[in-house]
Length: 113
Length: 111
Image (cartoon, rainbow over all chains, first blue to last red):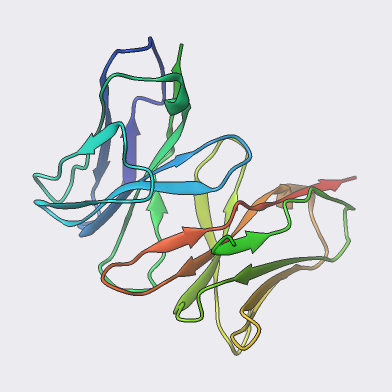
């Protein structure tokens, strides 16, 4: 049982490049989330999804896009990378029950230079 | 005001010490509460849920005071392996399972 799998683990991008961060879960969770965590800071929600075909913005969505075509996958797209997007990105999933904890992936450490 | 506030620390304690972390939250409609642990350069992992009646898991005790909007975590007999950042987490309820994470309190346990 893999849980939440994120790829790649590390990536260096040049300013203006684009990339997709991959996230997959095998727990049949309906809810999925993307967070970013800057050094010494808390987690900030970028986008979330409550099921296949349904996504919505979190508190810091600018510069990102998501899609959710299946229950299992929730990729995060960075368009026109900027140094401000240097961060650690975590994908998470949870059951569709309020108050249920999240399971996180191991993160993608992104540097934009 | 931040939705979830924690003392950032670091708390530097010797092995065997008892250490307490506090957290306050601003939204009185918050419905569920958690402590997560995050090791350096790793993902957050659920440590325990927090209930008004208090709950204990081995050396860890969590407590919730809804009237004061205050959450605590007590670690007894600290181990070197307890060194990590502890995140206070609150669920606001509403349309989806939205968790709000505090910035975390760093604990360093030394020999």
